[in-house]
Image 1 (cartoon, rainbow, N blue to C red):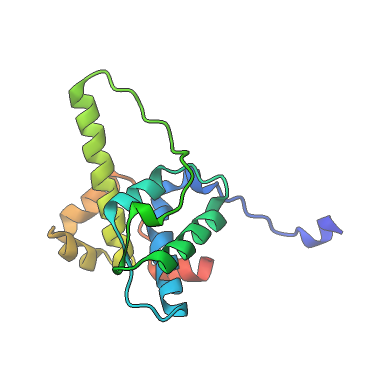
Image 2: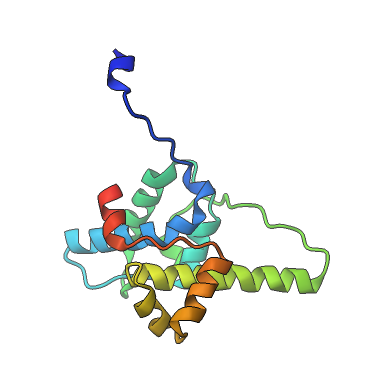
Length: 162
């Protein structure tokens, strides 16, 4: 029976291997739960998004969905902070750096990547709007996307895929 039903199988890597998708998925689920519960617009703080990106996600996208569902319900002032996330303590172990310069470059790159992903998610994948929101020119914003290997997926496609 399995072989009759399994005509087409698609291998999707786990969420922990697709960390660049976390910002877009978070944006999608926050909007979904905000509209279900008729809440005012809820945003996610950068530090909370960093926490989501650093978590190891053993429950994959469904765990992310559940965490954001609870977070939207807990959000009191229109934003989701780290305290509203309700994540277990497990995060990806921090890498040890040999020099201060290497640690600084890694921290700046992580912050830049997180910020760009967040802005792009808030703009639904629209590069022009995201560049304006970030105060950058469109071409330099696209260079940053390529530098950090951030895929540009329009929000409409994410909704259809989920």
